[in-house]
Length: 542
Image 1 (spheres, one colour):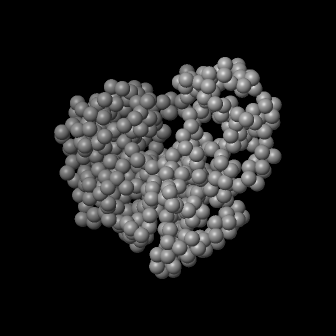
Image 2: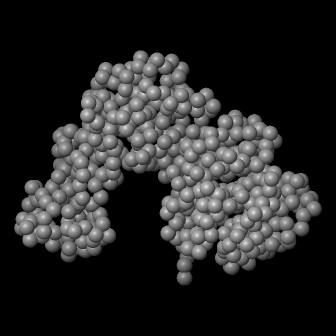
């Protein structure tokens, strides 16, 4: 028998706290509301709040026909029926196809859509959902999570003056697969309000959520972001002052929405510099790609003792496999010596790509050990011609961390090491000085842009894929005046603010002609976004 937690994970549902259901229903339901839908009602938390709101307003609605909840699981649907509303026990996408498509007559739609990945998404249900998305100009992929078509089809079911209030993963702000949805929402609603929380409000999952409130018709057009500490703040949020928060102009593009945490002045400054032709993109300075995919790090990554035991000194290369192994902005021989002395796995088994019989006896012995342990049966190893040979490409001049805590940086590779896929590899273009780029990368503009460009989930880590690094820009004018060794020492001593004071003066003020106020604004953007991200790591609702 599955545990409650396993069941919740399978159906993609974690039930919504009362403070959220009550707030959304209080905001969304008014005297003009005639018809309400909850497309993923679970055991009825939202339905309960809907009925209570209608009773408080003394609205003349028949809750048995004017309020509809949809729930796939029969046991949960039966629980939801106790609130007296109409509850349809079926797949929402089939319900949409059979009873909603083309009508668009719901005045209010509320809910907390399930969070289910593509591979766990029922195939028949997925076909219906994706067909409607494609019909409306979307291009769903295998990265598309079920919450996204739930959101889109719910929007399409709204009446002309309809409102939508949903609990949505904060992924909406930043993941690439939600880019079309961001553009759609910006065009579909006159006004969007995004309520975010510094603390994680779902105790069961490490998932940041936002409250997405959309109005199809509004005199005040744009987007506003209201950032709260926790659910207690939500209870205190006065709807009478709801529209006093700063409104930003909605950008009808697939751009990430993390920028809407900023003020209008901050957004304009970032956009101006992003569009400045004097500041090169990283693609004008270097290539970037993922590191080596071993398929079985437990076999391929070795410490010095194992190398000596199997006599593999001529069959290994120095490798960086963990973020914490990289200090400063230079990976030196001294760094590697320290890692070796500390017993770290900084050697990668890399024999020549030859048949087993042509390898040395030492290599054969180690490979046989791997077979005994079953390492050759892993998928990545199994599909290779010679399972013990990791595919290689160009050698890196430098590294960039895939996941960072405080800030990203370029680390120069002075030891001819390779990296695993936890760390991206960099190769500088002809004529580009690596030291200038590594030093210049650490400035307030690039770090602020990185916070907007990267992706962060509930755990506080900032993640970059190669494509996101390619969107960054680095001011290079005057970079030759920077001392990379000075910067390396400061970073190792955890003195990033001193680094930024140094680089900002040379690159941003003297190089680009920015004012001290503008540089201070950029520093504030980076500080605000990074501290918000990192601050979520340990914060939970008690």
